[in-house]
Image (cartoon, rainbow, N blue to C red; front, side, top):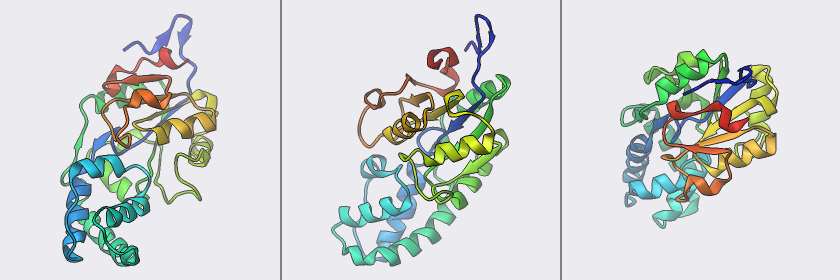
Amino acid sequence: MPLRGDAGPLQLQAAIIDLDGTMVDTVGDFEAALNAVLGELALPPVDRGFIERTVGKGSEHLIRSTLAQVGADAGLYPQAWALYQQHYRVMNGRHSAVYPGVTEGLRQLTAAGLKLACLTNKPTAFARPLLVAKGLDGFFSVVFGGDAFARKKPDPLPLLRTCEALGSTPARTLMVGDSSNDARAARAAGCPVVLVSYGYNHGEPAEAAGADAVIARLDALDLRSVL
């Protein structure tokens, strides 16, 4: 993957990388935690397909959507939320795996001189331990979860605040994600955006989200394609 343009180093300053569906396949963690919660509430389980279509908008949305999916009373949300926090803390990282090419891709971005941030809608208290468990934490200057700011992706606020933390300008900060949430947030923030093709894009192809490029692996990223 060439990381230099014809006139020398490329002018990106930083990259913001999503977590679930972009760096780590976490559907197994969600499946184990959600179905443990549903079992305690005497509710039927959900399948992986539902989870893949639903994750990415924060834990609150996931829990509410799961209760609706199994036909449960929405009033169970506070109890389900509390149980989910307990179970996910235990399951976090146990049933997940880093996607092929991610570690290599992060090394290449670092070698190109970019500061890296992890920005996810997953709660920060779950994001940080997962990065540690998968050996990815050392790549990132900052890590922000969905509870770090007043609004979550697809709102541009998290990207703008992350750029401030990195000391980079949005136009020179690449967003790498897996869904329309990432693409919409990047466009609104003024960041270039690349999506991976294998993630959780709410059941839609990544190619339909309007990114600057779609890649099959993180280590296949050619930074010239977004500048």
